[in-house]
Length: 241
Image 1 (cartoon, rainbow, N blue to C red):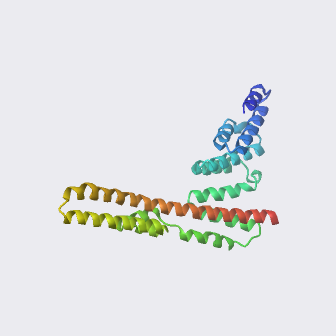
Image 2: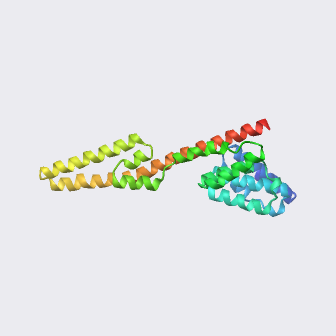
Image 3: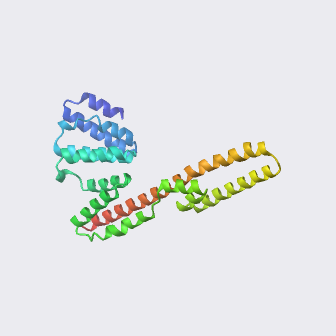
């Protein structure tokens, strides 16, 4: 990448410097160095670029934010692009990115509206969206999972779809309670308090967090599947148009 910096330093005009940074960013992106590619693009002053390049810069910056997991900034960049760039200049994949980012931010109504608009503009039955978004009904509320495990250890894991971990949690809590009862029955009160109750409390707190984690994990898989189905649909559409 030092070659690009040398070219940038010796560039005879601002336009040439911009071209060098664009190419450097593309190379970094090809090497999966998304953070570096984003930093490179941020060095470009969009106000000195033409409208076509400006549209590409906004799109590419938003995409790189998405690839680095910064979905809020990806969405903010999309919103900025709509203000400073005319819509016809955006690449066709801009609307796809907008849908995917909306999903990552759990803005399902927004994502669905964008997909329906895309399908309608390409002459596709918008009922296809119903099929894709039906999977969202299987999503679980992490807070509800935690509350269930707070009420009954293991219940939150069962709710989140992690039957194995739910059984493990329920069994461990049952064994610990049985152990504590045994210690008390044999007048081993200190043992019951130190090794029994404390261990049970740690498992109890961990189980509550664990239930929320599995709910979030399940939701992440569902979101990935929804996004993948949308991408497959769009790729099929682009191929047949």
